[in-house]
Amino acid sequence: MVHVYLCSMGANIAPEENFSTAQSMIRCLGRTIFSDADYTRPVDINTQHDFLNALFIIETDFTAEQLKEQFNAIEERLGRDRSDPRSSEKDRPMDIDILGQLRHQEADTAWENVPEYLQGMCASLKPAAAQLEHTA
Image 1: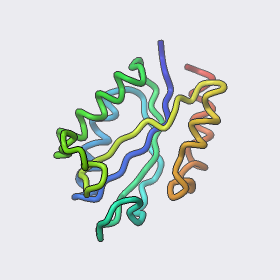
Image 2: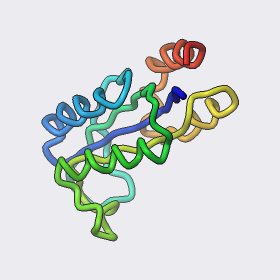
Image 3: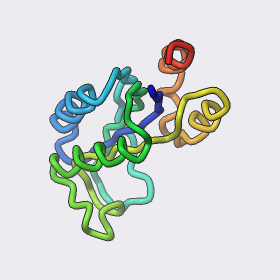
């Protein structure tokens, strides 16, 4: 079964390099469409390093649980220590999250899960998401 997910990615350690590498790895997991990336101020983390963030849509055969495992593996390959219980409070080379599934009634919930600081990236992805929803 094909699934379509709305996801986010962010990095504040070597962000340009890690974004490029992560996007290449993510493309291997399914058909993807990325928003433009933009720098944002850190949220809920005490750091001086801004984050490079983007949204993306992925069409894949992976379930949400399987996809999250793949995303965690990418984060770890880029140097994130997921075994550290405070890893979400620290600078990171990559953070990839599933915001929701873009299918029928779940689609609105996925877009509502986009953090305020990433809302500007939604406009460019919504038309592509609508097309994928109808073909998946």
